Amino acid sequence: MTVSADQNLIRQVIDNLLDNALKYTTRGRVTVRWGREEGRAWCEVQDTGVGIADDDLPRHLRALLPGRQGALAHARRHRARALIVKHVITLHGGRVEVVSRLGGGSRFRFELPSEA
Image 1 (tube, rainbow, N blue to C red):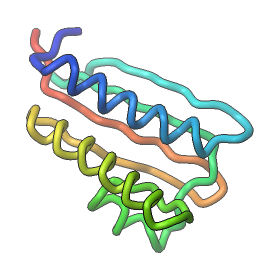
Image 2 (spheres, rainbow, N blue to C red; image 1 turned 135 degrees about the vertical axis):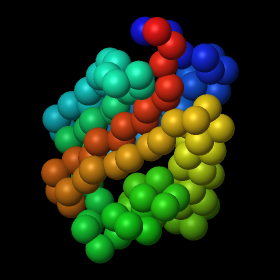
Image 3 (tube, one colour; image 1 turned 90 degrees about the horizontal axis):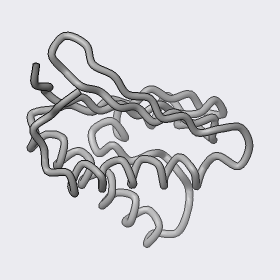
C-alpha cells in the first residue's frame, strides 16, 4: 500500500503508540496490524494492558492520552505524545480512534488516505 506522507513523522506516530502499549502491558501481548480498505491505509496497535476506564475515554479521545496514573511530568509526557500523534495524522488528512476497556487493554488505530 502507498500513502503520501512524511516517513519520519509517521514513524514517530508508530513509535509513540508502540512505546505506550509496551509500557502498560506487563502481561499478554502487543499486536500491530495494517491494511487498506475503501481508499484508506490503516495501522493499529493493540495491547492487553491496563486499559482506560469508560468515564475517562471521551476526555482521552480528545487528546488521545491513555488514562494512566503517575507523576505530573509523566502525564505531561504522554499528553505531548498524544498530541503529536493526533496532529501528525490530522496534518496528513487522516484520523485516529481508540477503543479501550479498563483491565482489558486498548486498541489505537490511525488511518491515512492511500494512493491507488
